[in-house]
Amino acid sequence: MFNYQLGIIPALDVDIQKAKKIAEAVKGLKKEIAGLKIGSILCWQHGLPKVVGELKKVCDFPVIFDAQKACTDIPDIVRKQAKVVANAGVDAFIAAPQGAGSATLTAFVDACKEYQIVPIVVLEMTHPEFSAFLSRDAAERILEKSIDLGVRSFVAPANKPERLKLYKNIAKKKREVIKILSPGVGPQGGGPDTAVEAGADFVIVGRAIYKAGEPKEEVKRIYDLIDKAYSSRKE
Ligand code: O7M
Image 1 (cartoon, protein in one colour):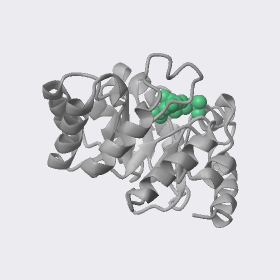
Image 2 (tube, helix red, strand yellow):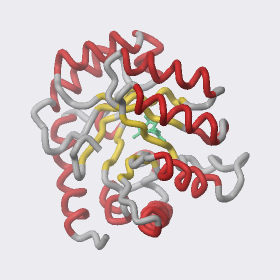
Image 3 (tube, helix red, strand yellow):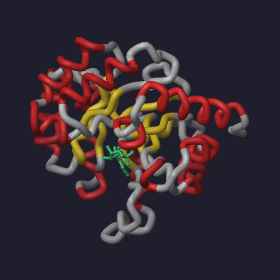
């Protein structure tokens, strides 16, 4: 994704002042930071175009929009949402198609291609009750369908490392290389290093970074861990 092999994606679930402060603190960490994730907490308060514009004044990292959660409506709305998101200057858009089905996912991916933003698809979430209303193989089916549509970036849980291995293997069997972005480190119980050992390429980190006294030092500390884990990973 965006030509990065490995990296950290801070989740900026904070207000705009705090988000800019974090972006400012980490802007020099070009190797460590692969993008900034923005979501509902920021954008419902301040509006998507303003949030993207303010962050891009401070740093030049790719901005990933997680509408928490998008791609859940009828295909026509999803297509229009992708256009609005692209027009706001976002670089990548995250979909969670679990409740919406295949036609909606197809519309999402096609629209992202048309408006030249990177589609990223959530396979499985970090919290324990996530699959309560889903069929057992929902994540596997979403992965297969998304790969066929040309998606190569996925979100899967750092706190369920065995699932990361499974998703990488499914892609391998289809002779495709996918990138996995993994949230769920720190307060949600996952380790950044164990996630990367299991197949994560990027870790999405919220509270462990924005609540740290020194976010920049925390990013460097996490990067050291994932860098070592990546070096010892057997693909
Ligand atoms: O590191 P945290 O726990 O403070 O924050 C985690 C971030 O990752 C937060 O922005 C969540 O919305 C997001 N996230 C999950 O925690 N679990 C998931 O399964 C998926 C996501 C996510 O980023 O989905 C795109």
